[in-house]
Image (cartoon, rainbow, N blue to C red; front, top):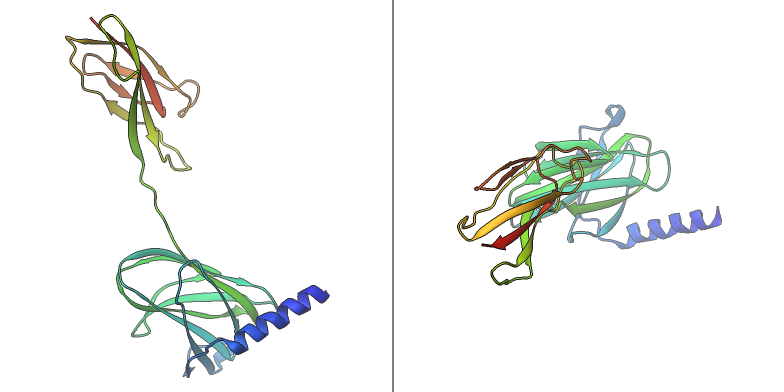
Length: 222
């Protein structure tokens, strides 16, 4: 209990010492009461900010984008019985998105703000803004060894990278080669689509459908 009280005192001191900006009245508030909206600023990605809201005090965190961003804002209660409500606003005060506890949005360059108010209760909260990094899937190949003589063989591995958590139900790879010089055989698959994945191969174009994350092709030069 003592450590929790010391943490609350630390958060209160942080709020008192941080720049609060200006305040204005709001007509949209809980229980039809006028609430004071305190304007503050979000200056950095991946930073943590602290605030306090109640039925009579809202906070409006202002920020600016110089380019388009996919982002998530989260308000985590750290004291009281607060259930925070978040609203993404443009410079005209129009609501672009909202959420309870968190919201996710994609916005172009411009000026915006996140207004935090209680959906219920009151108390201190921790605010974070994070950019969503989307990793695109890609395909890579490797050959081992990189060079061979006539009559020898090499293993060609085709890898499907950055597979999303939900996975894929199917995939198709097309490999182009000179059929007069190279012969493909012993294609093996892994279990990305399960132990009994269906595989269709069309030679000489070597089109492999419903493939797991890689296949190995043993090529020999005739």
